[in-house]
Each structure stands twice: as C-alpha cells, then as structure tokens.
Length: 140
Image (cartoon, rainbow, N blue to C red; front, side):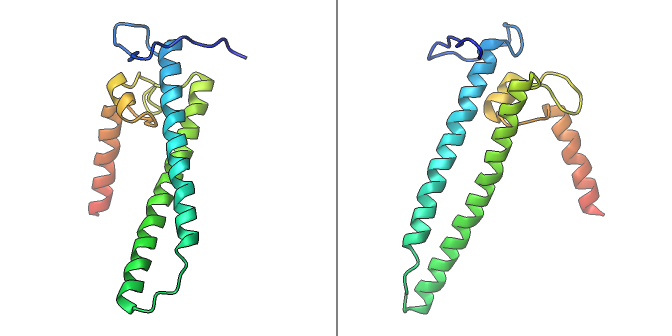
C-alpha cells in the first residue's frame, strides 16, 4: 500500500515541476475517480427513471415523445458507459506508471490537455495526425 500523498485543495499541476510526480498523479487519480463517481450516480438515477417511466401513455404523440426521450437517454448512458471504461483504463495507466504519456509517441501529454481530458491517451499532435488520417479514409 502506497503512502497517502498530501495534496492541497487548490493544487493544480504546473509545468515547472517534474512531469507526473506523485502529486500530479494523485491529482489526476482523484479527478478521474470523481468523474467516474459522478457518471455512476447519474447512471443510477437514469435506471431508476427508466424503471419508473414504464407507464401506459394513451396519447400516441406523447408516447412517441417519451420513447424518443428514453432512446436519447439510453444513447447518452451508453456514451457514459464507454467513458467509465476509459476512466478505468486511465486509472490502470496511473498504477502502471504510463499515465500522461502519448501511446503513439511516448512523449509527455501537456498538462492542460490532461486537465481538460484526463482520459486522453494521445498528445495533441498525435491526436491531430490521427484525425487527419481518419478524415482521409472517410472521404474515400
């Protein structure tokens, strides 16, 4: 078991400290766990809402509207489920000492990018290359 890392409440990772030091790793670990908790809580309330929402609505337009809302809610939940899997993968990378490094180039990912998208696995440059390749293949 690792020792608890002290992290001041107002701590933000800074470029002038060693990259992915214990404090930065703890900061991102806590950020990822908070995001996962939030998503799982929202998911629970959705499931409860969907279970409660299985009522018989006589008006066809109202029923269609309700079914559309439910389908949208399920699509959102599916995206969030995929995000939870990405969060779990990021937490594993923290444990394995690989977090914060681009999986394509091995270079450090900018702290600003990690703070905005803590599940990212690519540096901005690698992500842009990836998107350009995708666009080329989509246009075929």
